[in-house]
Length: 246
Image 1: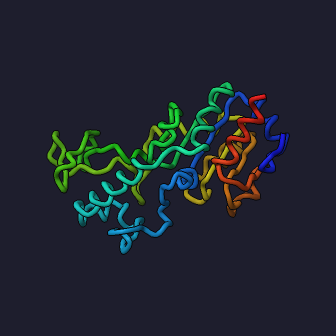
Image 2: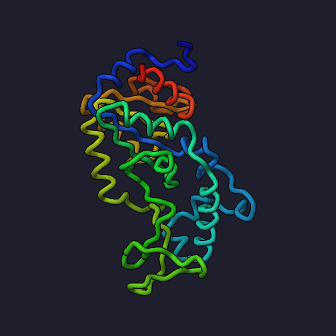
C-alpha cells in the first residue's frame, strides 16, 4: 500500500490498541471546506473590518446591529460550505475504535453534518442564539436588526464564545475529562497556542497518553508531541482510516 503521508507504524499500533481516542480540531479543518479563519482577510462588505474586533462583547454592546449583520453573513457563508474528507474520516473513525471523543474549536456544525455525534463544541455553535442578559437559549428573529429575548426583553446574541469570554463550563469539564482519560490525543488543524484548548494536549500527556499533531505546518509546540504529521486533515485522516481498516 502506497502511503501519501509519513504515518509511523507505531502510531497505527497505538490507535489500534487504544481504548479511548480524543480528537481536538481547529480552524484548519474547516478551512479545507472554504470556511475562512479569523486570521484571513475578510471579503466584500466586511473587507474593512477586523473579525477579531467584531467577535467581542464590547463590539456587541457598542453596535449590536452591526455584529448581527456580520454574523448573519457568516451564517450564510458557512451554510454553503460542505464537510470535507477530513470531517467524514473523523466520523468514520468512531466506528473503528472502542471510544472516540471529538472536541472542536469550530462553530460551523460541519463535523455533525459529516456524521459525528456527541461533539463537544468548545466555542459554541454559530447557528445557536441566546439572550445577552439572561442567557436563555432561544431562536432569533432574523427579520429584525436586533432580535430581543421573549423572556426578559434583552438583546439576543449569537451563541458562540467571543474573545474575552470563558469556555462553557460543561464543554470545559467534559473536554478535560476526555483528555485525562484518553490513550491517544490527536490535535488536528489547530495552532496549539490558544488556551485553554491548547492545554488539553498537556493534560493528555501528563496522564500518559500518546499525543499527536496533524497540521499542514508543524506548530511552535510540535517538539512536545510524540508524533507530528505534516499534512491536511482531509489527506491524513482518509489514510489513517485505510491503514486502520485492514
